[in-house]
Length: 254
Image 1 (cartoon, rainbow, N blue to C red):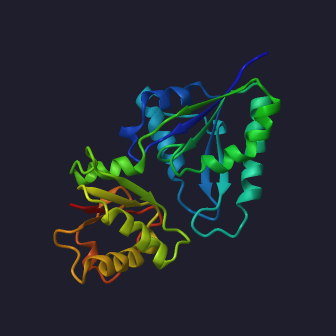
Image 2: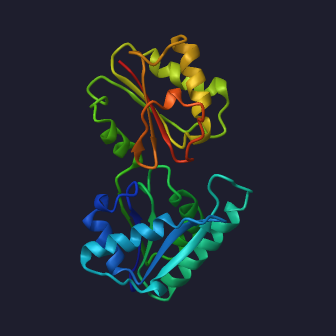
């Protein structure tokens, strides 16, 4: 039985310098490289990262026929993802069944809030019947860890707790409850991280204010926002609180 490889490759938060050697090697070994493309979107972030990544291995012109986009819905979902993921899985399985080694690229880390979950759910049954397919997960630098590096303060230390939350589809009370859970911990520092916080920044700020008083931005807590891999200064003073969908909001109780 000929083994067919499917590499699930984490590409990190967007900086080509943070792509691992294992990730680059997987891309080089692959006959086909699949990458997520936002349905109806204009920006091909993953595509650009792939092209830059292989340059580290001295490959300046990657064969375009190896690169196959897979459409998914992200922020503006209309309920098409179930069908899209099944269709995407079929495309990958077709290439694997022909004997090709393939990679599926995802931003950040494959096992940490990535598009891999929907793809895996769709190919899981095929994996039970076809034992020749070997999946290898190649971890990437998660945007959460990258964000802590931008802040530059080692807040996640002994006896501290970290709560990671996704505010999408949560109401104000649920977001407030998440913050209170961390705020009530006795040891310090305590950290709460809101992934995909863009549309919820205003709501998160309101929850902090209700829990910590009218001026919560002095010492307790410290608040940070990362948008497009950049630490945003004085964001609480901005009148316009519209941020990118993938923005990360971090609150630290000292």
